[in-house]
Amino acid sequence: MKKLLCALLVLSVLALPSMQAQVVTPAPSPNAKIEQKVGLTDITIDYSRPSKKGRVLFVDVESWGKPWRTGANQSTKITFSDDVMVEGKNVPAGTYAIYSIPDQNNWTIMLYEDLNLGGNMNAYDQSRELMRFKVKTQMMPVEMETFTFMVSDIKDNTANIGFWWGKYHVAFGVEVEVEKVVLASIEKTMKGVSRNDYYQAARYYKNSGRDLKQALEWAQKANEIGARYWQLRLEAQILAEMGDHKRAVAKLTESTAAAKEAGNTDYAAANEKMAAKWRNK
Image 1: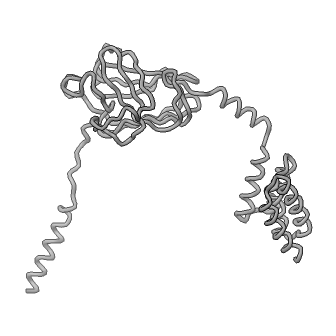
Image 2 (image 1 turned 45 degrees about the vertical axis):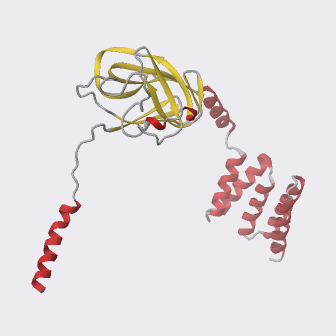
Image 3 (image 1 turned 90 degrees about the vertical axis):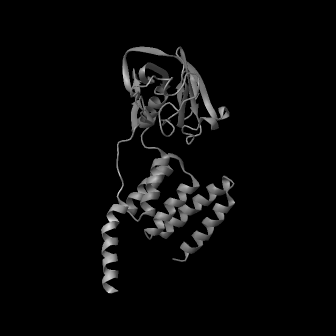
């Protein structure tokens, strides 16, 4: 009996690798990702790439006049890191599925809000479209065997996003905001470090147990630029942690007065309780 059990155990161990093994083959429509910065905006396209494989496009594979996932497998997705204009229409920052209706003359493009629809076109709901527009279908002199997205004609604030399959090429224009972002960045940089920058740095140093002297310097600079009751409390707390309770109480009194003036009585009451503890030290 023991010999039989041992034999069965050996057979089960030998069979285990073959039971766990999986056959690996190339994907018929491999996934691809394009990442392109246009101006200061990141544009990402994530899609699967079918190939012609001798088929007649939009006859043997997909159909003229019917919605298409504009790729294979899961929904083709496009992500804009900032608000953009697509063919002259506002598109908020975010991720959208790209669907389209193939046409030999004027191709329809749709930006769709459901990212999980995939190829289930029977469930396509036009009410979930962010937008749709038509662009001219272009015929190329050479064929593209594998479906390909591209971002081309890149300038500081514009680019074209297109796809090419067989001899069919379709592209639409994207415009990004550059001037306002650059000017705001220049203005902020030229002004130097802001009040809130000093406050956040001081708060981080205090809360993470770093150099309290440096934290105090930054808190004081924040209040020099423009005192706020929460900034004054932070300065008081740093002074208290440094053992200077007399100055801490004085600064907390300033915070309390500012909080009352702003109508934040709860904040003022919490300050008064804190000051009472410090006066006894």
